Image (cartoon, helix red, strand yellow):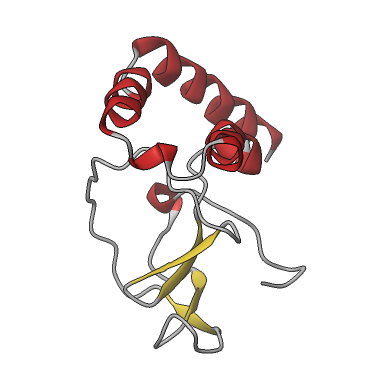
Length: 120
């Protein structure tokens, strides 16, 4: 949202950190201080949005799950551009589900996360 912001993983947030918050998805963002952190889990691996930004419970965040950023969803964007709606097909969803849960992909994500942590 601004030049001073940076993308961080949700698990790295701590009480007292500053994040962007908006009362409605279309509302203007404002700074908010993290008051508490509760660990959670989600079955979602990747989210593809037009802007790369999403709002969840008023919290503004990047829709990327790895330091690869927009590159991680490039194959999905390409598939949707070539075959609009293909990401909704059952056979495509099953195939992507298999790939998303592969140990090789998980290992690659850990390497990316470790490399990004080493640059900080």
